[in-house]
Length: 550
Image (cartoon, rainbow, N blue to C red; front, side, top):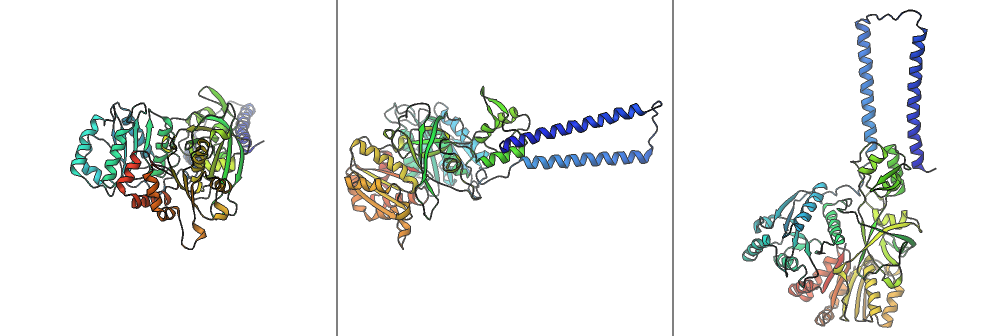
């Protein structure tokens, strides 16, 4: 019998015990009546007895209230670092502006504001019709949700604001922004207004907090990626998905540590195979959305606090399952209804998904991931990596879906490809190199960085074999802890400035994958020093500078 079942049995014994005591008391009352030989006589109790009765009753009610409040407090779990708001992350007001023609951008902006406010972030919402350059200049953080209409046109409500921005040349050097661009790839100028608006922001000195997210005809995966960025912005990793993704069933078939002895956290090579169908198709650069589960110990502790039976059967969307299975994939914080198992089940909110880059291609017959274990401030494992690298046993079912990541696909032709990354960013870079090998496109330059060559050179044999066969034209490595002066990928990039300019002149596409803090900004600064801001901006607009950073 598991711990959750034992907890449920304990609750049942408590109920039976209370019923037994009540039965004994009723029996004693009946016996007292039977022993009464004469008629019942009701006498005045007197003031003293009344006062004693009132005092005892008051003490009883007060004691019950204390026990009830104490029990409610026990049922509220301690807020963990996973769900708490990070200090300082959400204090500044976020300006949120939208430009909508049909109402879709306005709807997404409203959902964005609701998510941020639920995380404790103050949000000022404007339509672009009501926004002026002065308000934007006063902001320090801004989010924009903009659509493109017709053949690359701006929504009507945005025309006046864009004109004012261009006329006033308002400097935005203090502004950090995020952009969600809506469009339809059936049109030639996909997300053209989003691209033009970002160029306007960058030319005014604004800095992007993350790469622009483009939504193709309402793509739910791209919208969920926007939600992920909202969690990063607000310091809350537990913001629920606006729409629960439809996962497929996969099986965890392999897991191994790839960096034993590393000074950093352990990295795992994880392999997953579909359970119900043939391996689906995807492209290198795509990502998986994993539906994680809570640590078993956390679920058992929650059932003990709630005094519920994990084996209770409930119905969710017409499908029967146990409350324990549902709780395993749900948020177990405050706001859960007390009552029957069914009432509790209906109040549970699903855990948010987690995104991971794919390190394999369909020809491999399975999905491979490269994951680094991440720990919260309380040293507990993170939600997604904890599930995939620790709590899910090999052979377990994993809920997963593949999300197309158009913004990080390799070029279809044989133009040169400059790949830059660090850490587990090697996952996407490896997938891209595998795809390029299958297409026999060998103009590939890889710049990769980690801590130590001995422990942290992920997929070493494969990469060196590619270099020896000529599949990688040039390989630059930066293992920072192997040098007295820390060497990072941006240093290797700057040292090869002349070759970077030569490759870009030949039409090269630059693709960066890895850490959003440190590596990605450092690479961007070096590229701007080598190529100039204007050329880098042109590479962004023409999709020749692509990033997948986290």
